[in-house]
Length: 322
Image 1: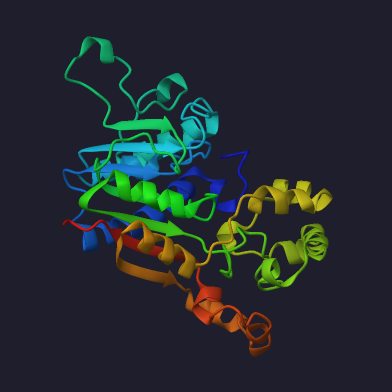
Image 2: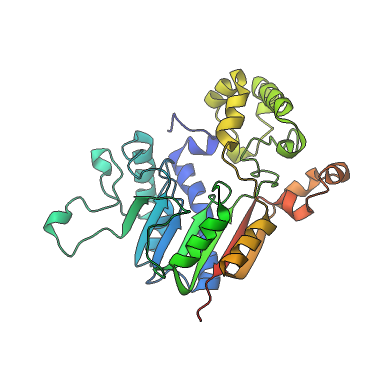
């Protein structure tokens, strides 16, 4: 069990592994359909999330799907939480469930590289993790076949610059599969601060002080707390007790670095970088449509229905071959 979990799905590591695999499966499906799959290719994961318990899982799964070699970059250092007991426990479960190869677990550390590289010249890690800014990528031009990224583009401060960098490091004919959370989305737009089942689109409809006040009411009332958030993204009772005392902390921790980018902006940035758009799909759970009442739609008239209802957006981009 994970005593430091933020959300309920992270409490049990088996559930956590299965949930963390879902975004990768969507990316992998798009890579297979539009970009020829991972087989034999050099992969870059933009925004691995080293500070997260599951950071690096996408790369390990890409290797299982035939990637030749994988690089992962993040603004955090790869060793930041490598010895975290929860991270070690997660990766033991991932190893057992998915057949992932990762070193160091028995010694209490997650190590992707070989632990004995000095004695085997022909043995090297197929995963390389590096601390690096997405807006200033220290790789040569035309290096990677595929770039993947999940839940990162809503956080970067200069998404246009990041897309320009991705275009530069991709080989001609290479492509990128990207999942991200546009700000207007019902469940994830405000990164869980929206309490959608209690006050839909609170992050768009309420001023900050009123929003914080209502979050405090939700966390202080067990009946509201248990029903206000999507099941997977309901904070644990331990976290809820903390946020009941300081709801502003919850709002700050979850959403402080969101860039509030919308889909048309993202697509314009991709086009200006030189990319061809192969696919643009908003993922919309049908069960959420009932929350978009005529009154709310009128109140948020600057947004379209799909933009408001999307859980996340997937884009597949390609660098022209010629």
